[in-house]
Length: 113
Image 1 (tube, helix red, strand yellow):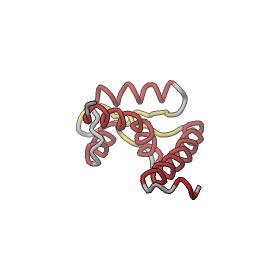
Image 2: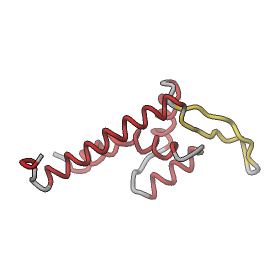
Image 3: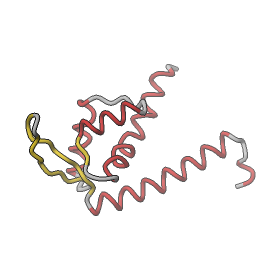
Image 4: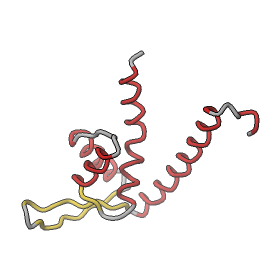
């Protein structure tokens, strides 16, 4: 097995959740998302982010608005829709369950469930 491939798959598995978490804090520009993800070592390229944002928008979880920029072309700012907020709540509950389960396995305390 290749450790790097497994690490990449783990990151891909939680990327959508991380992106939705960032957007849930308020309207966000894609480059800001990329910067934040890179800072926390969730390496993502534009070729991954933009199709994911489009898929989330087409699923009705995101919407965007264009904002004029003083230093270039207009920027697209994303925010969660009402359905996106509900979806995010469900993902957050699942995330908490996964973290709890993983920690129980790591500490070998599954007998005290």
